[in-house]
Length: 109
Image (cartoon, one colour):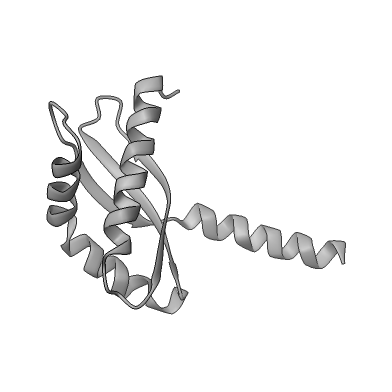
């Protein structure tokens, strides 16, 4: 169970990461789907989805190379005693949800 503080920080990181990724010129649409942080807020995992899916690996490589820039950007926007280390990953849970919705939509029709 996550604490109220953790929820607030996750929400803030999601907003800041979204604005950082919006400035990146990757030729794809990048959406921050969720944030997972450790209890002590020393590490944060940013889950993204990429459209079109065919560019996922390319975009993920670019963004992983820019985690230092992301950290500096977030540091310039907020004041925290310790700024966490960021990891970026593709959100496979979101893909699974979309696949299930598609299957259920076909069954209902």
